Image 1 (cartoon, one colour):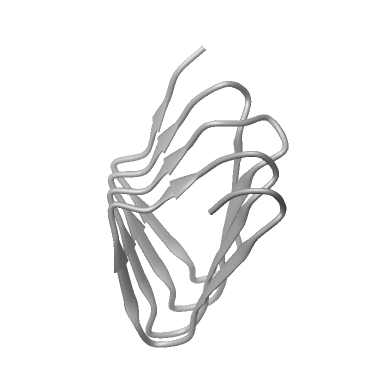
Image 2 (cartoon, rainbow, N blue to C red):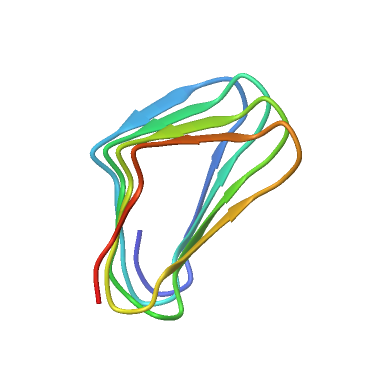
Length: 79
């Protein structure tokens, strides 16, 4: 996901997504984001109620927001 692109998971699954340059991934109820890599300080992943993100890697000051009842498993944050 590049240049302010957006991926929305509304009950679907995304595997091996890479988020760069201000991209954004939204994981809503029933959605699963697996093995996502966030590579830019202006990039982020948002996990809403009953959404799941597993094995996310956050580099270069990226963000992960987890709202009530959202699930983030095995997140790695690198300096």
